[in-house]
Length: 258
Image (cartoon, rainbow, N blue to C red; front, side):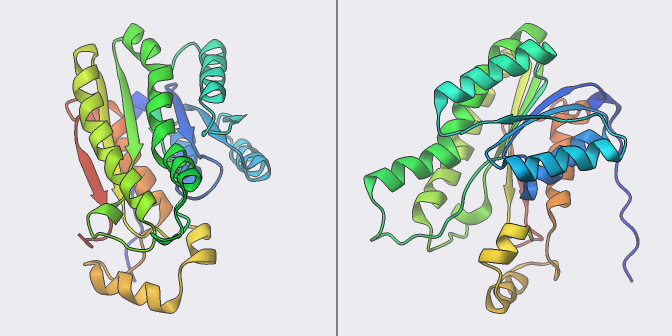
């Protein structure tokens, strides 16, 4: 039997204001939970009101600071800007931004229309830029900040059956690299996390057949599934002062697949 996992406590995250997109379920919910357990003030954005309410109630019942949920369509730039203004008015700062939201709906090359392309890019790439744009002034004023963008290993394999999503996730790495140099003089760090096949409820319901799981485990060095909370622990490190000299990097968490 494997030994119990012992995880870190980051004093620098205590009372930090952390914004997480797509925080109501999956990896996002694990990230919200992990920051709440570090005694951070978490604000998260999502469209899933019911799932968000359950997460808020759960964390509050467990004795953690109540996260603030904001209903937001991240494909709507005006909505992004309005919610970020509300967060800044309420909390006075944004110390950490985690651009987690995304959608990996499967699609073929032949089925892609201009409208599908635009929506997929807005869901998986565009909002990461405009969320960053909205919080950068506050980070500059504070002379510090950490932006963590969520990419994927899908573009390195490369995956098939979702070409627009793969394109967007590759672009996230480019966005991370340029923003790190744009914002470095203001002591704002920008890094990227590239998960592999993570065992979320959505993945289990939609994609995880026994055949797909066999492919994953054959490719990974670790012969077990990787869980959302394991991704969240990497995000915590990149947000904390422990990674204060780390920027412009992309971190793979995939059990050794690539």
